[in-house]
Image (cartoon, rainbow, N blue to C red; front, side, top):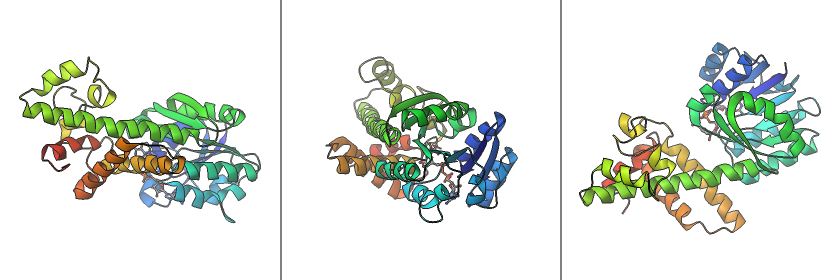
Length: 298
Ligand code: NAD
């Protein structure tokens, strides 16, 4: 049994911490939100008085926070958690954050004498509940080896992508594909409608031909062909447009810094910005098909 501190017990962190409790670990958690604290307590997480108190005895610290600013704000600086944990603590950051902040996290953790792994996830709240998340990890081999047994309690597929920040890099590249491909599939359905094609006919052809992809085959943006997709429940997320936009913006920040040309990534970011800002932040990201149908993307 390890002492694990879990900082950020929100929609994802709460159930992830709960899975560590189920595996028999002593989990001491902290969050700023009373509702998140209450829900985590119901999952068997002991709530510490402060984040610093949570990490005081920790072997492992997991952070699951909104953005790079929150992660560096909690961990670094004079009163940051890196200075409150016992020497040699393993820090795992599973938040989705920008690559530059992820690298800064590793640098600060190593400088403070700790082990560090960036390990963002895909699989959403359902995957967090069912412990079927995919973890994309970055960090030194030895640090990743130390993190793997804990990641396996919260996820099904664990991929070591490379050194510091490589997990975040893989995450935003994957999600840039996702944003672009959802728009591509949605545009094809809108064009098909204008050409008199039924949704089912286009699905039957494209899902078994060269147009096949996750956005079509698993998460079809029109109702009918894939009964489990959010299109069948009025685009209740699922994966909200605001989160898609967050990840696309991270991809464009990284592309700018790295000097990579991503013209379709830029176009997808622009379309999701306009979609989200027209009152659809909380709509599933596949709902962009309705918006495109109304020529809002013009
Ligand atoms: P959330 O907003 O539900 O949870 C974040 C929690 O962090 C909140 O409860 C907030 O109170 C807490 N928090 C903020 N600052 C804090 C601090 N200094 N100390 C302690 N707690 C603090 O968000 P979420 O959906 O759980 O997402 C967490 C991360 O996972 C994000 O980076 C998100 O992009 C990523 N992610 C989310 C999903 C998803 O489907 N929700 C999927 C993959 C990745």
